[in-house]
Length: 290
Image 1 (tube, helix red, strand yellow):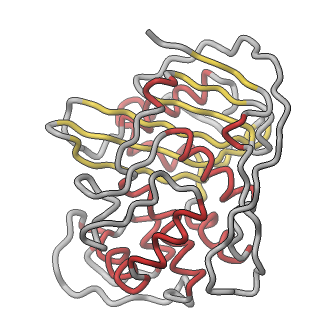
Image 2: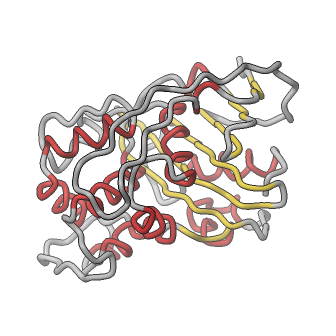
């Protein structure tokens, strides 16, 4: 049975992390004690249908909608949504000094044709280039990766097994809906203790509009038109004989700035069309934020 809640001053956003100097310090941020946030009464949310986990909140944390909270509580691999914390760690540690500097492709054919060329950090985020981030993961190393993920409060912060695949299906890293939403809010609220210039680099790399997501929605993409700005990242992977798809990010629309998480676990194998984007875009429209 589907359940929906709309909460004010949601506790999921209560835990903030202390900011460290934005001068490019290589030390991971240190968590700060969580402030006490007074709870307020729940109110009736808009009618929203979603075939999985959907969460929507104002960036300031004052309102939150959750569809299928029991599904949102289940942790799965983050897949390519992990490129957001991964890119921030690469920049903050100095593993990547210039987000626009090209990294040479080694000639090995990738899953997508767009991977088969030189890429910078910026283009690798937009094109979800696996080989680029496998290379940066090896340079960052297990201990630094684990320390940053723990400081971010990112899922189980587990970095076990192959350092180049731990965020993919079969790897050790797992994250649920509330943790994803909390992380995205910190990215756009400046609460990660990461240099502001690095946050802006990653934010700009995922900037777009609803039209940019039409290809990931297939036939469902044509009717949705909006002037909202969307800063988002997808993730797609196999899950048993089926698939898991994510779509997480922020939007600036007619009702202000919101962060969102959409995830669908499906029986069908992965494809270009993302159920998380299809369901998420429809839910955002139903919520009236587009």
